Length: 495
Image 1 (tube, rainbow, N blue to C red):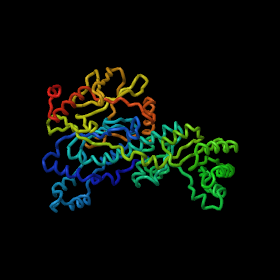
Image 2: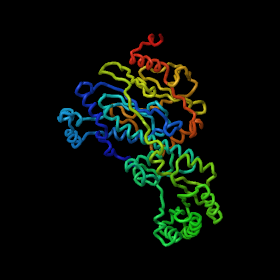
Image 3: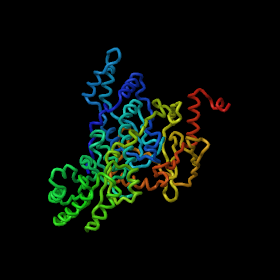
Image 4: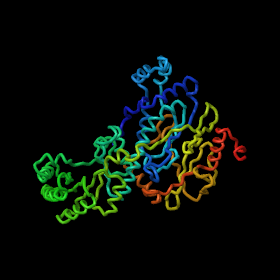
């Protein structure tokens, strides 16, 4: 499949104004070449769950690769004014933007990786003005796709191996939201989509048959089914609840005979309303009795992971799940809440200096350094914990990590478990050194990653908290920086 080219989103104008005003201020103050390190992460798992699923890296890389400011962009920026009515941006700064090319290093977690709060999904290192300019777009891309991929993974987990088809384009948040959601849903484990553009652009399997309007366009339901069989005999899934669902199944059975006469078969029936558990069981009985044991029962109607789980508990005879609105809109959590924070700076030729942001809210206190994440697994390959550490001062061999919520709780891995570095190189000095995997391989990675989590982390109600900690030395440096920022020395604090 041919890779999609960078889209209009690759423009530097996909940003908030304050990224441009800061870049201008860095440029005017002579600090635009100061190196900085920023990390993109989220603070809490979405949907009250036990994990999130990283997605959006391929689009983020496309954005960075194609990032430019066109002549039209610069002409628009030249029209912006400050409070005094004068030009907001100097002509020389706009010329600098016109020559702008991304030159930073980027590390990122591969798509389809299970991730957890406060560990970096992406690390951007390079000239501070460049790092700043890309913040908004990276958050926009990664936040949304990670959120939808996580929702899809939850729905697929509830379906317990049965296919889930995403078909929410009509109710998605605009064309781009629909396209990104279809891609992310496939990353999260969905078997296909109704979105034809997603099929064309990303190779996601597409599917779909007919709507209620097809049935209503004919004098009878049976007539519509027979006409559909004649028109598209190799696409025989019939929607049976336009009028009466049980009668609709009976008509589908009659139409099934016509499919067979045409050398095909009735693939299945879809139920889109009513008591899906009872109706699906009755439909299964009718299909089997009529000699269509291989015909599948498809179900839709505002499904999400909780509804699917409930229907499974009720022994619904559903084979394929069609999930739309509540998947592509990440129903009940409108945003992931990812952030992008500065953690270190370095003057040209100098040493890295740690930076920390303090807050009245503990969750908003940042972790300093050039961070990486090491994942530990047991002898069976099951994930047991992630350690965040500082590349500036790598961890000792003992690898003790501290629980950020309780500094008295510590875990030592001491080489007992296999370890994997989660962040991989994507850009080096602005050159992309990463080859995007095939999307089906990303989906396979998702399935493998979820399979390596203990089932207690996957449950929807009160999932077990996965262990993520800060390496001991990094924890001590962070504590010292926080105390210093608050005007307290370690000795004063102890006193």
